[in-house]
Image (cartoon, rainbow, N blue to C red; front, side, top):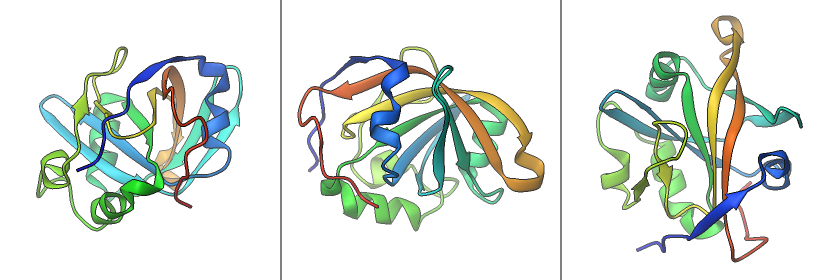
Length: 161
């Protein structure tokens, strides 16, 4: 079983430290009582202040629907020790199973958004939808990181790419 990470508040303006290297992320989303996790490999830091991140989320993903309805998500940064869960999540459909239960991950309440954080990930960035003008044509969501949480140790964990 994966270990839960104790996270502390982290400056939103420095979230890029963990996102710019381009790690594979676990994006969690929620609308009403429905939640999901998806594996996300296509993301990029767009701006530092406000802290903006662009994410490509295909229209067929269940997360796409939840984010369109809620306007929120959490970008969770898993360490390499979660490789089995990351791959399995990417090969399953959230409208068919609860991925938290199915893959032994813990949903933790976020502080600003309704989407849950993933306790086993070493960093979690709470996001509000900032710009959806490119979603219909390109499935490109632009999020603003509104709250950042990072584990105290390790400072530079091994990530997946």
